[in-house]
Length: 151
Image 1 (cartoon, rainbow, N blue to C red):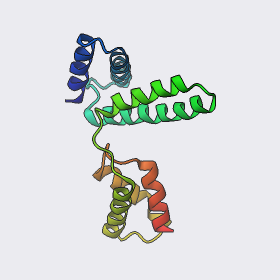
Image 2 (cartoon, rainbow, N blue to C red; image 1 turned 135 degrees about the horizontal axis):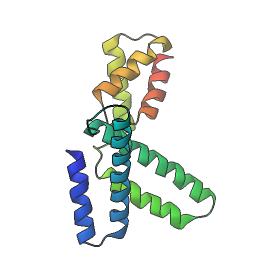
Image 3 (cartoon, rainbow, N blue to C red; image 1 turned 180 degrees about the vertical axis):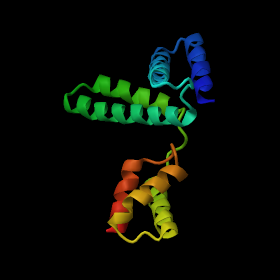
């Protein structure tokens, strides 16, 4: 389970006195705990599963990429580098991401499988991609490729 891997990685980082890794893993585990608490408030007793944790990790990477752009524009290169280090740590727990060529090939395959003919089929295509490739695909890039393919 991904939660266990993160907890074990935190223990190892603390033993090795890796400050950046320890801090980043604590942030991840705190975000997961927040999701658990939010789920309890909605009446669910279950802890969030691996799929939701993967979504959370992907969101954290996206946020850090946006921060990097902002820091670089503001001339804060040391903060941008810190964000890059955090991205590398977070990506250790994500499945290997698909390349642009692999995304285009996957979009083409789904469009062919569904017989999608126009932009009106965009929702079905994206839903199928999310189902087939959870956690491994940048869905922003996939959306752009699907729109281009269906136009």
